[in-house]
Image 1: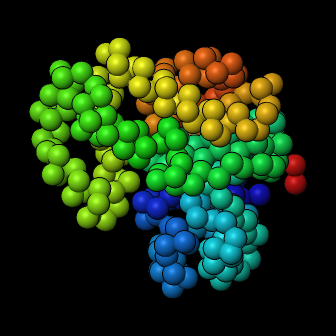
Image 2: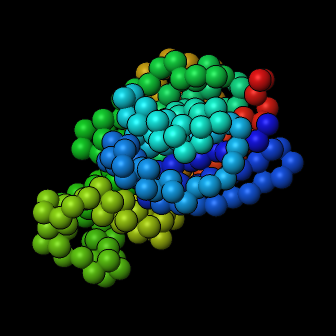
Length: 274
C-alpha cells in the first residue's frame, strides 16, 4: 500500500509519500477550506502529482462541511485513490497517541485539545479562538504579554527590555491589534521575547501560569487524570520545560511533546490494521 499523507496548516502543507520502505517528502502552500474556495484548493493542489493508493489529508479547518470540499478536490485529482480528510486535531492525536488512549493537544499560534480513544476523538473542548479562548497559544501569550507590558505589570527592567528589543511603541501595538489584519499572528510573533527572557523569574512564572490556565480550562474538563497529556506545535516544543512544570503542578501525566506531527501520522497509518 502506498500512502500519501498531508499535514496542512494555513501557511504550508507538509506531504509524505511512503510505502513503508521508501519515503519522499515535499511541501506546498497551505490549504484551509474555511478560508479557501474549492477553486482555490484545486489550483493549490495542481502541483501534487504523486500517485498513491491511499490519501490521508489532515488539515486546519477540515471539519464538516468544509472537509467535504477538500475531499471532492482530492477525489477528482486522484480518482483511483481512497481519500480520507480529517482535522489537524485528529492528526495530532494519531501522531501523539498512536493506537492508545490519551489526551492530545495543539499549542501553536492557536490551541486545541481532545480526548482520544485510540482511533477517534471522543470529546473536544471548543478552543473558541484567541479572543475568547486559545489559552496557552502563541496569540494569547502575546496578548497577555503586551497587556502586562502596557499596564506595567512586569518589572520596569523587563518593560524597558521589551521596548528596546521590539522597537514597538504603545501606539504601534494598538494599531497592529485593532486596525491591521491578522492581529493574532502579530501577537504570536512577540512570543520569542519570552523565550529570550525565560530564565527570569517573572517570565518563568508567567509561562507556567498560562500553561496551567490551558490545562485547567481545557484538559481538566475531560476528567481523565489517568491518561497522559501530549502536545504538538511550536509553542509546546519551544517551552516544553515550562509546560512539563505546569503539568506537574496540575497533577497531570506528561506524555509526548512533538514539534511537528507528520512523522507520527506516518507511523500511525503504517501500523494501522487494514
